Length: 408
Image 1 (tube, one colour):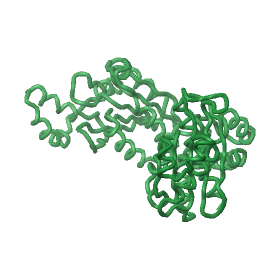
Image 2 (cartoon, rainbow, N blue to C red):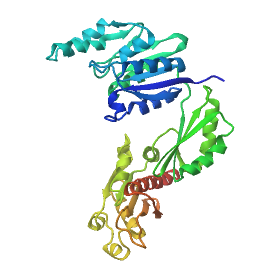
Image 3 (cartoon, helix red, strand yellow):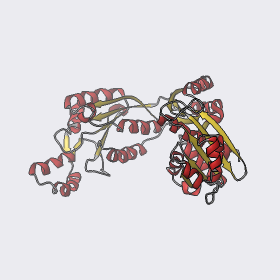
Image 4 (cartoon, helix red, strand yellow):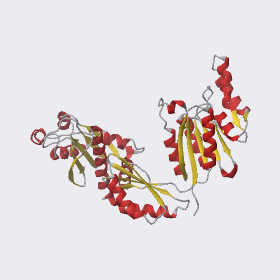
């Protein structure tokens, strides 16, 4: 068995440890490391304290194959990462003339002499390190190969500066098997667990589940660098999840729907009341969606339902805005939009007010109209806050589209 490479992440900045700024780097770095076949054993946020950072770098280098450090590479007094790394490794910081030359023009913008001189701290490089030239901003990164195959990488803190340098560095490294991401809807987190655990018991993989309203992601991590078990476990988990699994590569439900629609030559339209355009927004978030989505109507008021979508006033008067008949008429009205071959509609009570005994908060009616057959109607009673009801309703509408497109 070949072991997976291990990694640690250090994010540096007192603004992180005092809550003045949120650390978003750790999540992105961890995801990129996992995709490259690393197992992250530690993730720490540390203040701008040279001794604390130095001792943490030294201990993590001993424990992990790769240590990624972000933050503290700028020109100001609290940017102490370079010095801390120098202390941890016992390596000198040496001026890099190429970086210094690039910083000259930037330094000239400052009116204070001390500020101009301070800019050139960013040109100090650890002895033996490879410079990772800045793509955005002024602070370059540094990568250092150490004894025993260990590596230390220093990256700037701003995400748009950090990201391209990390991606570039990882692209030069051999990749191990990436985690498998199976995304599901219409199944609870607990049910997904109980379906998948026995299915993958025979394979050398680890399981974690990520849940959001109406959506569950089943993530399988390899225990070693051999991808065979991971592939087999993925197939077994997918079979156990059945139709609830809509994606095996981490694609969102909206991405899956747009791909299916494009493959089948279908054009989608939407008619939304309680979801307020969230279904259309999810679809148009997908690049290339213009080839499979013609448009939608947010028909919140009854006058829009009847005046734009053609819902008969008698239906609204007799059955109400939240009813099977209104949902059906909304979907059929959306199907009349230019080019549409399939349309989905939502109408419901998202709360927290507006419910009654016969129409409680969380009641949502859905309808799917298509040029190839009769309109389908479904009722769901959803739990949670207003935001949760709307999010779940959006996924149900998207999944109705997915199931219809799969059947074509």
